[in-house]
Length: 276
Image (cartoon, rainbow, N blue to C red; front, top):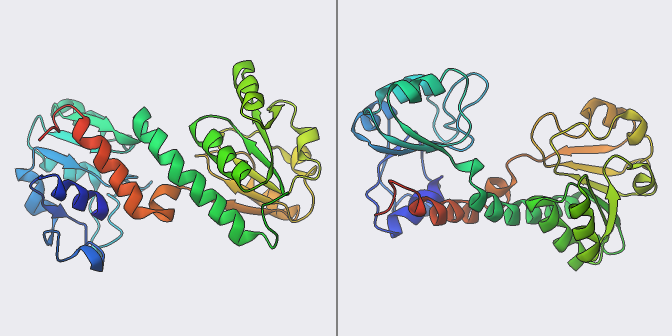
C-alpha cells in the first residue's frame, strides 16, 4: 500500500496516509502517518488496505500498533465518498449502501487480476525453488486450474524446463493447455497425473484433492496452495500423509510489494471518480 501511495504521488495525487507507516525507503517521500479519525471525515476518495479486514472486522493496519474497526471507519467518511478496497465483512455493505458510497472491490477487477497473476506465478515458482532440493528442470509439476494464474504459472514452469501437466474442467481450457504445449488433464480425473508428481500448484478454490487422491502423491511431494478458502485439500490430511503443504495467500504483495503497488497505481487512475 505504501508503494501504491508513492505511485499515486508521482502521478500528482494529493495524499494523506491513515494507519499506514511507510517503509524506510519511502518515509521521506510520503506524508506522515495519521490516525483514521483525523483523516477520514475530510476524505471523499479513500483506498482501504487489501485485504481490507480480518475475521474480527478490524481494518488491516499491520504497520501501526493501533487497531480500528472497519465499520467505524466507514461511518466517518463523508456521504457519497468513492471507496476502493477488497472484500468487505458482512456488517459493512449495509453502511456502504446507506451512506451512498461508490465501492469498488479492486481484487474483482479483471485487469488487476491479469497483472497480479504475474507476481503470483513468479512468487509461486520462487517458493517451490526454495522448498525443493532439486532444480525445477525435469521436475514433474501439476498445475490445478488454467485461468489467469494457472496459465501464467505454466508458462514460467515451462520456461524453466519443468515437465508441466495442467488440469482444467472445461473442454476449451483442455484444448488451450494442449495448444500451449503442456499436458492436459481433466480435473475430475486427476489420479494418473498425481503418480510420481513432485510439485502440485493449486489455483482452484475447491476441494479437488480428497485423501484418496493425496495418497497418490509420492512421499514429501510439495503442495503449494494459491487459491482462497477452502483450498484444494485438508492441510492436516496432507501433512499426515508426509506431504509438504505450503499455503501461499497474497503472493503479489509478499513476493513483489513494489510491483504489486505499482499495478494498483496503474489500474486505479483508470477507474470512474479517480481520474486526476
